Amino acid sequence: MGSVVIRNLDDAIINQFRTKAELNNRSLEAELREALAAQAPLTPEQKLALIEKVRVILPPGSPDSVELIREDRASR
Image (cartoon, rainbow, N blue to C red; front, side, top):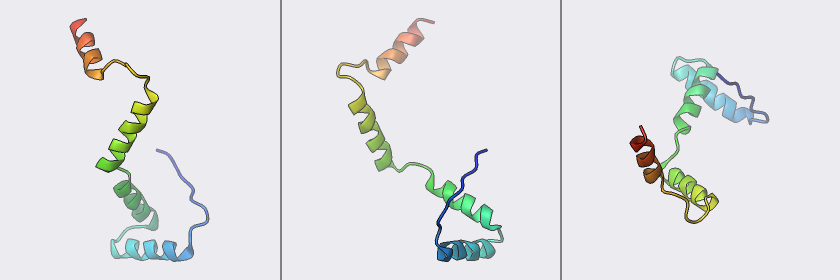
């Protein structure tokens, strides 16, 4: 598992998370881990934005992934 160091956090934010951790019977680290995990999944809007970015990167006329998958399956 990775580690992250976050610098320059406002003391008030740290204290708020410390209070939440206490209320949830967790350590500050566990509370922060939970908060990050809750925010990690992409929203549907973010997923669509990512798809649009990829579409811009791919050259026009790029093969459809469905076609590529079918060809791969047929070759087996």
